Amino acid sequence: MTAFILVSGAHTGDWVWEEVAGRLRESGAEVHPVTLTGMGDRRHLAGPNTDLDTHIEDVVELIDQVEAPEVVLVGHCYGIHPVLGAAGRRPERIARIVHLDAGLPQDGDPALKLVPDQAVRDRLAQDAGPVGRTGDGWRVPPPPPGEWHRWGSVAGVPEAALARLSERAAPQPVRTLTQPLRLPEAVAALPTTGVLCTANGSSIGMVETVLRLGDPRFLALVDPRVTFFELDTGHWPMLSVPGELTGVLLRAAAGEGYRLSAPGGERPGHLRAFLLDVPERPRERVGRVDLYLPDADGPRPAVVFVHGGPVPAGARPTPRDWPAFTGYGRYVAQLGAVGVTVDHRLHDLTDYERAAEDVAEAVALVRADPRVDGDRVALWFFSGGGPLSADWLAAPPPWLRCVAATYPILLPPPSWGLSGPRFRPADAVRSAGRLPVVLTRVGLEVAEIAVTVEAFLTAAEECGADVEVIDVPDGHHGFETLDHTEQARDAVRHAVRSVLGHLRS
Image (tube, rainbow, N blue to C red; front, top):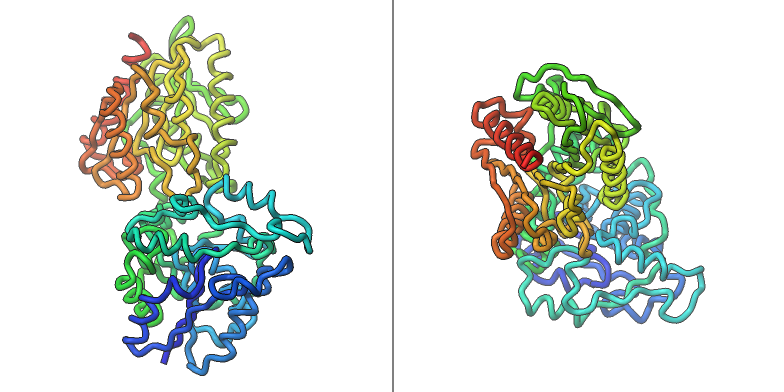
């Protein structure tokens, strides 16, 4: 018999697992939903010294009481921290660890690092006082009703369940979120399953994309003992799709699931050749900025290409040397404008503010160049760089003649933690006025990205924004190097002509 130990996220208790636990028991499994110290009906046991070790010990004690030969630990959100800590102390008892819409904490990471919302992280960091602090300073209140989405998407959760979530939520001891997690090497050897909730912004396809970029943190995921499942729901699948989640947990315990493949010997998609045969052009490198110069006298308009991400800090080559961006830079220069690429520092989801500063600095550098007509500049955003367009859409300067976006993310997924008013192009477009926007949309887009594009277009239509949509029906995300079709080539030519047309009008 398999025993499931279910550990929920911050502010909750064993009660969130009621439907899933009942269904698992009906299947013949042994089930132990956990109420951690200070949570649920054990909230009276919390104190200023309640920390992550306290919660780890809660799970260890339960493991020691279970007689079943196979123990599957399931950690949801914050719950993955005590789950991994307990697995490190009893690795011989654990058959599998399930990350239920949870991150991949590394040794030394506090749970605070994985809280998605920046505003929440900032508040928790301020609340994290010295050990022994008394009063409410040692615990964090749960989100007020209506704000649970700041911890993750509530898509699919019935209103009654949301109300119950608020009614039964308990304050979280701060030290459970700020104490670093310590992971023995034995944990890395345990079989693992990731259950990704697509409405919260994660999917197998997105994991594979990051893996191809060479992020070393993800290389361990190609181990055959690691499997994946997707659920088409938000961050609370035990409340939104308990039946589907039950089936996934049973299959995970049996070792089933999708397995990632290691990047093969073939060239990764983002490093394949650009779909247009564009001749070499003079290129100048200034710091993080490259300029592709046309054969022309006098100042020329400029197009600044802003890559997506996050891109791992150690990725080589860096985006400005990827064939797509060298191709776009050369193509624009061939047609008489200055092509500009920039290596901004979007290495993690927490880096958007820094990346925005890098882009603003690059634009200032370009406009100050005597070979550039500083009153005729376009900004072109790609993929995960899409949120960086919001600043420019919200308050377009007079010299900005056009904003372009290609397979962009235009409304950050809930799991990204960008819930503030900034970095939300689908909202910012309402302030864009008559600024032309050229949007290239691919038909074979990742669903989690496609929905953000539709949200942007809906907002644009409602406010009468000037948006031109260029469709690539058979195109993939990154089609400039993946799809060498005439349809794809026409789309690139069309988009570049439109952008340059706005610069010259």
